[in-house]
Image 1 (cartoon, rainbow, N blue to C red):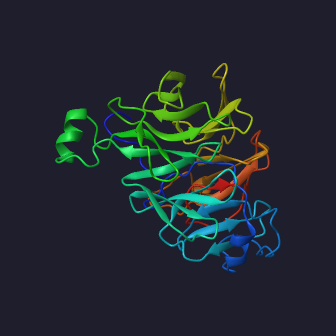
Image 2 (spheres, rainbow, N blue to C red):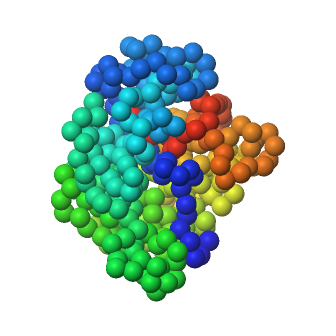
Length: 313
């Protein structure tokens, strides 16, 4: 895949990476009964099942992992890649080509980084890891792309949750993206064209964890495994210690954007029922949120189409 950056699954719905969040009463008080999923809507007091969120066609939705429906959060129509802070008090997200944070009730929106996307919280909630176009801000971006030899190169940055202390962690020509912070806060996983890499939180100690064409690496809550997409667009799990690859979906794809549940027992992902039935997909498919057990069993569709990467609370 040399020569171009791995593109988001759907325009405006850039990949979101799974994080540990908690849906608060403030959010539940704001949600309206808009069913975008299959099955009946959940009740307002059902906090247990309101811990999966994803950007949809009209904004961010709270989705029931049990399959009882979804609810639209009003005022989130420009939001993609929402990510809850570890304490559940704040949300990081992309809007346009920038990264913002807001309070749990979506008030007090604050710009964190221009030209960034794909925010991932550090476990202590003090910093965000993000992707940023390597040529963003250059006087002649096209000349920058030509010089680097890639159409849309990206690098991994970290930034304080308050927007201060921006640090560039990678600078290799090509695509360094999809960053995800390890549960202990010591390392960051990210994707390059030739595999999944790990580095220390300050950008030092970059090492190849597993060679291959992988995207969207996300740490398991126990830090022992990383879920990702492989070159066949199937969901796989990589053992951090020995690099062993376990294929979970085996559905002849495409399956995208894995996200671990906080207890590590389930993985949410994006798929499409029509693609699965026919084996043919187009670039404009309406992606659905699915969920399965961490071993790949009990794969179930939670929503109808039109969603971006899911994320757990």
